[in-house]
Length: 119
Ligand SMILES: [Cu+2]
Image 1 (cartoon, rainbow, N blue to C red):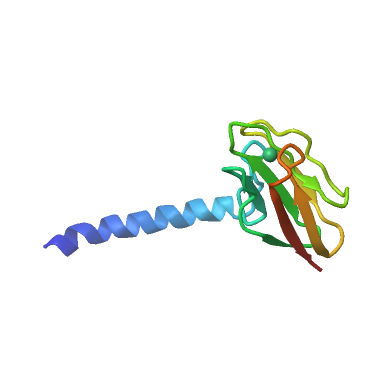
Image 2: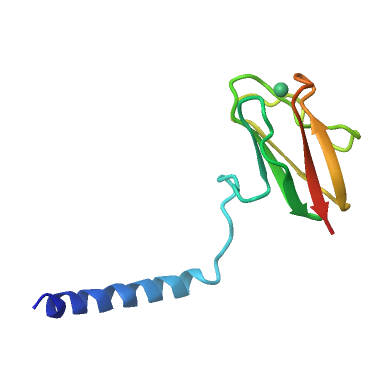
């Protein structure tokens, strides 16, 4: 008895989902207001840059400061420098060359990290 009631509803949901998906398939433009929080994100939290990151050449890396105190994301080789990032602020940089890059917080020199860029 239950199956007979549920079956038509299930089919209706499937049809609705399919038609909606078809319309959206060609319009996959990412929102410009929502920050992308994929793998290429470094979250500064608790005076730490977190785990070392590996990205592909050309991939944009976004650094977000979640601490209440300001931090910077500063290349040890002078390749990039976010400047002071207040809580909630972010900075993005795309690496053009493969290699391993060291970085530091210029306000708190004990904060260090590295990122590997693969070609
Ligand atoms: Cu800092």
